[in-house]
Length: 582
Image (tube, rainbow, N blue to C red; front, side, top):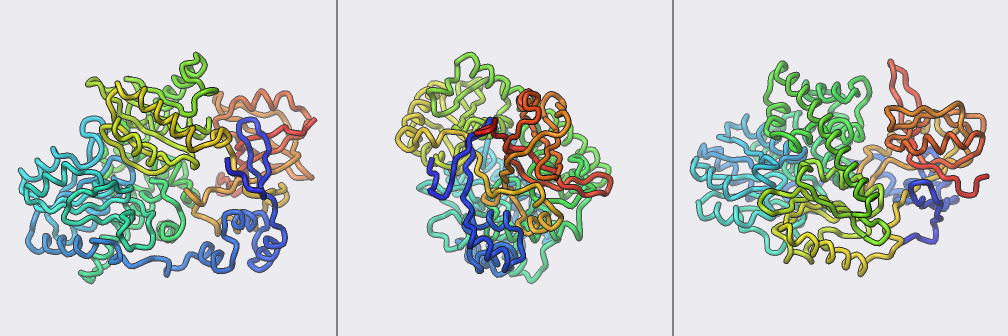
């Protein structure tokens, strides 16, 4: 763990808190200049946004931050080929992916190409039956049906065999992707991916839907046409759902799209909001991430993702209502499956089959775990235990297909690349990856990853940590504070919702245990009372019952609660600390 000299450590019940030291003079000066809450300015300064030009760019996010689409390598070449296909009535196949990024990217391509008269269709793989990415089977079918162009979205950068077959079949393959390329890259007609080392596009962190949007923007620009407004709704959902960093151009587009959404919202998007019980409140990126995206993701995890495209852009209202009910039910089923996987892992830990004391990674496998849900469970385990996690679905033919999640200190993609001789294939990013290998190689992979972690990390790196942004008093949490915090939105990757440290609070009234999972209580400090809810931490209910009037420190995020048209401020508890308390 690399704790700077400007940080201090507080031991919480579930996490080790990393608390920054207040840079008082700088924070007070900037806070006065911008008429901005001191704790929130402290948060920005801690995150390196500590100069006027950086603050102006972050808080106001000007349109000038967006680079021309033509700077993307091969973008002009790809667009010119699409225009030729439009003129010659050549058949185009959109090849997407089964997650929200892939579904929204595919929907966006269809939404924009059909009005131009394109002879276009799409294919989204079934996670179990087809697997990830563009396959030779899909290319073969496309060739048999006289497709002349295949255009991938959110995949393709590792589709070597499919690319070779496309070339052999005289199909022009246009790859649009954002995943990290390996060496070499596939041989394709055009590859549009800002992550390529020789791509001059200045912003490298677009989602797949962001790359698709840039390509379509250039296409419509060359045709002197205006993009349909619906593209911004799709761009918003895909970007937030794929957890790309909400800095730079991503921040601009998510903010811009949220504003567009207040002006014009589709019937399908409203149906998703109703399912998530957020139809009556202003929508935020957090609502997209935790309320909207999981419903669409449930299609790809447990069913057929192709229904998602029809739901988003092609269906009539009765069909939208029907699919919305299916999405709700699938998402509820997904939650139950995830709970069962986590319960299996907990039992394995208690039985000593997973040794948290002496092992640096969590690795487990089962035939009964659906491959579409294990990534979510892996994310939860990494957050809970502070260790890289790999969970596998075991297939009937002797393979382990899994999802891996990591901590910031350990680059999972590079580690898997160093283990590639054991793998059938892999792909992803530094903190999240998909991987497949023979079951016989799973113990070897675990041993090699353990070795990589020992080489690159210290024991402190593997302690579950909670990074605090600033200290607040309950009295600081006013309407002005919330208005200032809205300027920091959208929250997400690399612009996380601020976590605040509130010291010496006491309980008011008895805590309430909800559904045996969540704890609701009220806290008091310096004459102010605020409600707090702790999600998924039932163990705190027993701890609270022993505290009585004993003070404790609280780590929490601040959120607005909407009920019957009324707005109130509520805390979402992350952890408590009894360190130094009597």
